[in-house]
Length: 100
Image 1 (cartoon, rainbow, N blue to C red):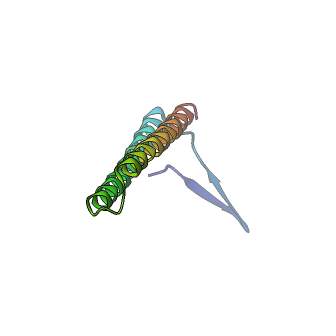
Image 2 (cartoon, rainbow, N blue to C red):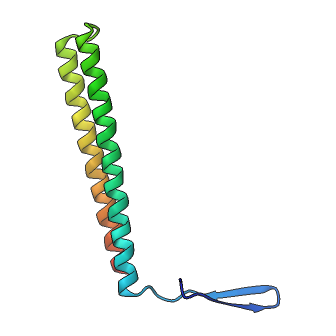
Image 3 (cartoon, rainbow, N blue to C red):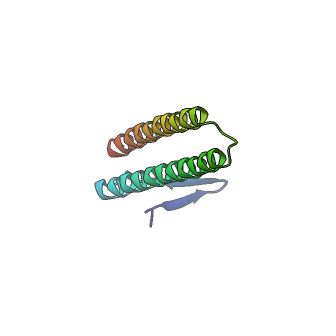
C-alpha cells in the first residue's frame, strides 16, 4: 500500500504522494543493496565463464601461456573496476534514499 489517495477534479486527476516514512526508506535501501549484490554476482559469473574459456583455449594450445595470464589479469582488473562502480552507485543511491 503506497498510501495514495486520488482525487478527481473533472478533467484533472490529483494524487498526493505522502513523504516516505523512515521504515519505507530503509526498505528501499535494502532493496538497492540487494540489487547491487545481484549485479556483483552477475559480474562474478561472467568472470568465471571467461576464465573457463581462457583455460580451455590454453589447454587446447590455442592460447599461449603469456597471453592466457595477460587475459586473466585484464579480466580480473575489469571485474574489479565494475564491482567498484556498482559499490559506488549502491552507496550513492542508499544515501539518497536515506535523505529523501
